[in-house]
Each structure stands twice: as structure tokens, then as C-alpha cells.
Image: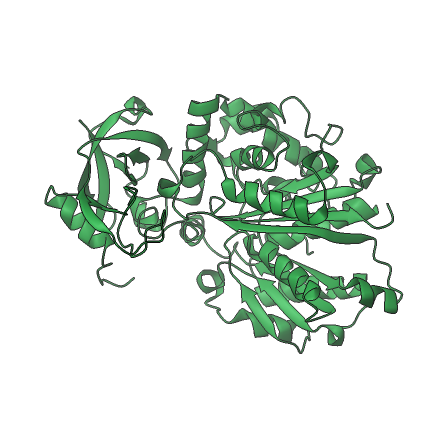
Length: 127
Length: 379
């Protein structure tokens, strides 16, 4: 796998690490995550960076036991989709017992590293 | 179609050649009648380091015609069938070979898991550790939260589809399982245990599609006709969807296919739907208009989709028991449904009055969906 950065995605992770996470807003106020050049809702190419709301809510989650090789030493782990209002984000749960994770729970976004590959990963922690 | 199952030493080109040969025999046509080939494959680069498979498969089938590989994850050969139908309808050809193949069992479970996850968003899902069963588990848990339902309800989907495959020689599993078997199986990604998941499989499927005029001119016995086609797309990543436990691409593909065929969901007598995971059958039945959202979860438990139910679903055994060589699955549904309607499937007797059938083939978490309506000719 290439070590090259994924522009947009890695910029987003940098911003989360710097405590300045953002999303891209279209002219009608809808949101998307980078890399994005065309607003999914309107087709407009006028996108502006807006601060991501500080907390989100877990929309759904799963505890994965059978993982791909890049996560072999991480398994079992909990993956969740969290709704931050204008956008939802996918990440792994940190700082909570898997049995305590619930839909509707409030979380904040962060960046951690995986056990297996030491790659950066988006994570959610309880507020 | 070939028998689905484990043949890890057989190459995809060998599997496809077998399926194509059977399709030629079934149609009574020779390879030189084919004017175009649309071939579906998903993970050839992972499994065999093989790209550029269109001409490779044309060669394997002894076809000298423009040949194109379609990659739409698990919907690859369903999409190939749609391309074939549209090609014929456009007047560009009278005879098209469609199909697909996949070799998966030469990969270890972790390698196969990695290959399958390529159907998800590589940045926001795969980098977060989302696997293919993981993605559908995210949908299942949200479904339970929004509409209710239990693991046991889902288990009945797997039990039913295994039951349907017991006599199907082409199926990977010919063995009945119990609800307890499903519930007690090792967890893959909660709430799914091993038996909530379709298996990794090797196999191929092919079909020769002909125009009505060609069939008439050549006195061919065409017992089944594709009368409706629909395809739609959705965001690849679940995080970008409005509602995680719903599959609007299937709704749209279904509506398009129904309109194309001039039928309503209630006209469908038998269906083959994409049950890559138990919840996927539930979502399919709701999206296709057979049930309201939130109401198909008990369909299998209540016997409504069983062989003797109101709407038999996955009489082939579905992906769950027939097997799921991903690039072959969409065309295999067409093959099995054709046999069910014309009467030479092992389960045909159960649907001897059936005139209209439907196939639903999905890619990823239904970011791709293609629906076909098949009708018995002169029914």
C-alpha cells in the first residue's frame, strides 16, 4: 500500500488532531466531508469549510470480531457511525467498554493509531 | 451456472468457460453467434492478480466479439445482465453473452475479508476497520433500534434459505440448519454470527440473451423473457446516507423495473433477492414493495417467504446457502429463476403456477442495485 497522503481525508484527520475539525458546507447549508469538490445536495462547486459541531450522537455501531489483516491485532473492536448534524462520521470507539456503547450516546471525535499497523484512525470517545 | 462452493484450484476463466458452455448448450447457439460479451467480476485483482478480464473471458468462451468487464462489487453480473438487455433493446445486437465469475476460496479468511471490504468506502469506512459483515451489522443494529426485531428473527432467514437449498445440487450447502445453530455460531460482527453471513464461494454463471426477433427467426424455444430492468446507485459510505436501515437504490431499481415490465409488486410470484447477510433479505423485501419498512423482519419466521409461503423468496437457497461467488451472483439469480419459472429447477414444483419472477442483486451496502423482472412466455 502506498504511503502517500490522501489529500482531503488526511487533511481532515490533521484538523481533528489539531482540535479544529471541519466539514464542507454547500450553499443550502448541507454538509459533506473532504475530499469533495461538488456539493452532493445542490451540485454547487462553492463549498466552504465550517467547524464541525463538538459533539455527535452514535447512530449505529457494531463490535467486529473477524477483521481484515490491517486490523488483526485490533479485533475485537467497536465501529460506529456518529451523527454530528451536518455530517455523519465513521470511527472506532475508545474509552468505553463495548457493552456500554449505545445508540444515541454523545461522543466527541478524535484520532488514534491502530494496534496492527500504527496507522491513524478516526475514533469516538464519550463526552 | 457452475456448482457453487469450494474449488480453490480452479481459475475464474475455467469456471466461466464451464458456465458459458452450459449456456450455449441450453440456448442451442454456438459461441460465434455472440455479438457482445458483458462479464461481471469483483476481486480478480486480489484473488488472481488478474485485470483486463473482458477479452480473457471471451477467449475462454471462444467468443470473438467486443468484451467488457463490469465491476459493481457483488452486483457485477446483475449489472452485466442489464447491459446485455439494454444492448439488445437498443438494436445494437441480437445475441449477447452475459455472466460473471469469482474465485474466492484460494484466499484466506482475512485476505477474503480485505478483498470484500473494497466494496466499501476506502477512506472513511475501510480505514476505520469496517468489514463487509461489519457494514451490514451497522445497518442491522440501526434497523433493530428503529423498527425492532431480534437476532432470532434474522436467524429464520438463514434457516429458510438453507432449507430451500437442501435438494439443489448447484448449491454450496445442502444441509438444513436450526435457529439454534445460527444463534450459537461464532460472532463475526455483532449481531451477526457465522450463519448470518453468506459464505465465500467459487463459481460462475452465464446466460445467452437473444432478441425476440432473433428467437422467432431461428425458431428458438425461449420459455422466459426479461421484461423489466432497473438499476440505481447510492452513496458508497453508510455515513453519507439519510437513513442507514433503508436501501433507496433498491427502491428505485425496483420501481424502474416494475414500470418497465408494467407490473406491480403484488404481481410477483417468486423472488431471488440478495441475502448476502440475513438483514439484507429483510431490507430487500421492504425496498421492493413487498413489505412496508420495518415489517419484513418477521416474514421468514412467519413462513411467508418459505417454499410454501405467499411469496417464496430464494428458492435457490439464496446467497446464504447457494453460495456467493460475488461476480457470478447476479447472473446466477437469473439462471436459477429462469429454471424455476420454466420448470426444470429442483424447486419448480413448488411454484408451478408462478408466471412472474424478480431478481434483486446488490453491490456493497446496496450502493449499487439492479432488479430484473422475468416472465414465463405464453403464461
